Length: 405
Image 1 (tube, rainbow, N blue to C red):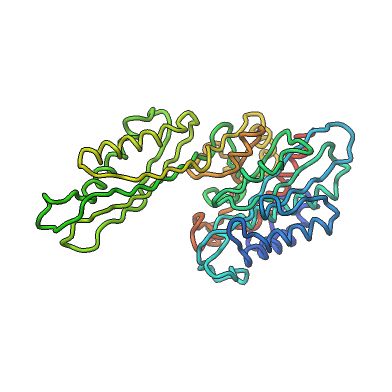
Image 2 (cartoon, one colour):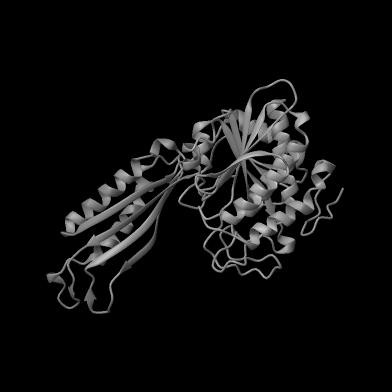
């Protein structure tokens, strides 16, 4: 069967069951509604209200206002057998980006857009909840569906966990997906172990002594100090990290000075650190502090360093990754198919859930270059092929069936 869905490429959809294929118009409708009314982290009131309204309409028990705007829905199977609980997580927040797409469903909120696919994640999770509620006789146990706020920052997973979303009933395992424009439609990226990197941010202000550009010996040049700091930070990965491991230290901003002939009194730099291996937690903050302190001392400068550990690495449980991979083999049928080498230095606070219970986070390809739907994530023209929505529901439903199998 060749897809006739709007905005779809020619892929084989025969492995998506008719009852899920029939949901495609609703999935598209919901996704576009979310896309038109994007909301930033912990401000997802409209999104949460719509999700709650649908869950209530379908008779699905759920809790609202979890970690401010989060929702947890529970679908209890009627089939005798397992008492296990599987969780499905979807994030709801958008980004502070002005949308440049000229589409009927473009963002109606100035300066905010769904530029990462979370509108699709929410629609897929909502469709999965609807399907499971209509087919409770087909599975035992219970499925918790977690609609999470603020993944893009400052992070909604940790406060949701603190609020008890993995308890009552206690979750045994968790899965989640990310629509992924780095992979073409009809592919799934899944692997055991680290999938996405840990991320840490730092901000440093260097205090020198300003003065005239013609009399530098009376000054402590914060620009010179900052320049040496930036250069030295690049040696942390090349000379302090095992070359078998992957890590990145990036200085993304450097601000100093006001005029051609004035030596700057202060310089401020901002950067990020990313790595896969959890054993490096705490290492980079210590090493960056040592580098900055040593250079500042040698020049007679002072510094103020603020270091923030945001999200740990997203590490998949091997057994759960194999479950998702086996399901993907049943669902996708394209030449590329399953992509195990799909690691990215991007980060995700799904990592906090995976630290609590075994689980798997995976990528669902949604790029379609033939329709110009392949702009990168966080781009003001980001959009994706909506055929992936039905594929996402099928993936989740089959994971539920196989988990309780």
